[in-house]
Image (cartoon, rainbow, N blue to C red; front, side, top):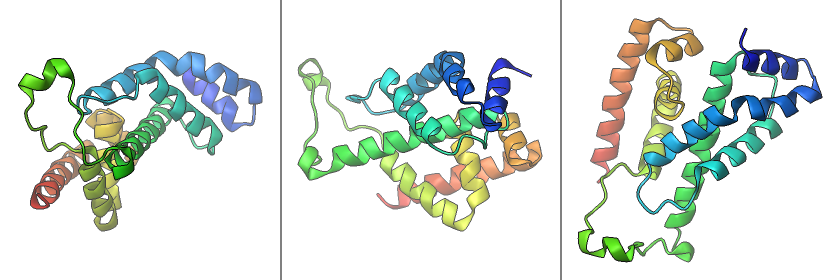
Length: 185
């Protein structure tokens, strides 16, 4: 049993001191996860990895903490919390009140300005919400693979399905999301 799994089990049993042990035990991995998530964002992202980790951790610890069976489940929950924070941030920036109709241009990048790729996080979230209505299991698989960064084997384990089924669902979900996002443009 890993140290993180031991701490999570203690939290599940109601040990309030274990909550204090959790952040130091997972901080570096959460920071790497946050940095990876932010690297997928469009340039001009104002949210820093440290702030994303802290906000996600506050949400996780403030939520129901007894549901984490292992470190894999905890990091999946952390990735989901980070995904929601990034989506909220993206939606906030799109509002007119926050300059949603304006495009931020850094002075040194002004000459090199090109249209950003269509990997808009809000469009992905909207498509993922539609997929969740149609097939929640495949939407959960996408969240674990894309947002939590789990391998296909880890995802299959968390969802309780075979690797072959996870591969099929992953292929279907990617094609479905690609079609959904690109048909709306």
